[in-house]
Length: 70
Image (tube, rainbow, N blue to C red; front, side, top):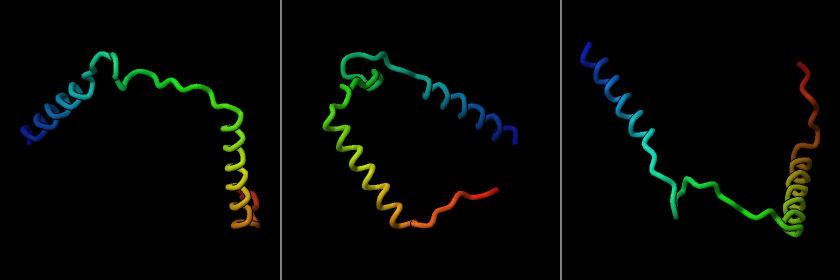
């Protein structure tokens, strides 16, 4: 029983060390923040149109939604 507990503890320590290991962020590193340009007006308009279409389909699929009282 003691061997199982010691083995579990050793495994947890080894896993913690492996997960905390970090490589320095450099060229081509995935750890740098992703920088995207802000969306343009056409992209925002397309996104709003898609969102409106989704809301419309949901309202047709569930026409009688009422708030749940509780």
